[in-house]
Amino acid sequence: MSTEQINDGFEDGMLIIHPQPETPASSETQSLSPQNALLTGRGRYLEDSILLNLMTALFTGRIKEAEDLSRVLHTRFGSLAGTLTATDRELGGIKNMGAHMLPMLRVLQESALRYNHARLPPEDILGSERQLLDYLTARLSRENIEQFRILFLDEKKSLIADEAQARGTVNHTPVYPREVARRAVEIGASGLVLVHNHPSGDPTPSEADLQMTQQVRAALEVVGIEVIDHLIIGNGCHTSFRRNGFL
Figure (cartoon, rainbow, N blue to C red):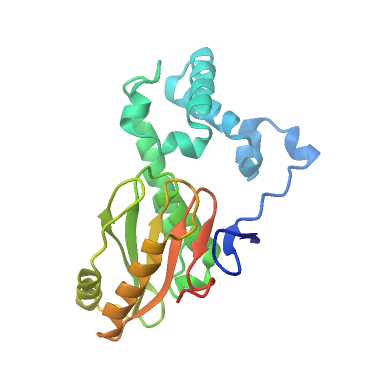
């Protein structure tokens, strides 16, 4: 993964992690039809607009209507991911959506979450950072309000549970350290990873984020449970408290 130093008020600048871009498609891949690209394992090279067009064509069964609808969705939400994570209210205002489109989009969204969850290794999920971040990004990066989640881990750093602890506003989520500690003991966790999103897309931690993390850490130290990391998920990037020296 690539890294970028961003000076945002911290002494040494914040280390924000951006995934490596995909290798450009070869001329051979570019000459394939979208259907053949998907069938030969090269679908990752297709533009979002093409995938949206294919998806809406499957849902509507009408090519011209699908082209118009996919163009509107791409313009309105910016990407395939933006379309899949748009709210019911946002999607309901789109012409030609049809009664069956919204349920199908929700099926695709849930399928993507389950696929990324299934890719997590059975032991030491922190040793497979890319898979973990793919899962967390799929779950959180497009949320329009803050959500605070906890990954409860056993002594082998295997995932015991991934639970949403709180949902807040666009820039704040209330977190209660004693409740976090109580739940960690109840579930038998040896360690945990705190996770929350920033709807702004910027994963730089606020002063409140830093204070909350230390409060949760102190509450867990009393019961002998480690806060292994706190990850903030932005739009296509993230910040690790451990990597930045905040833990």
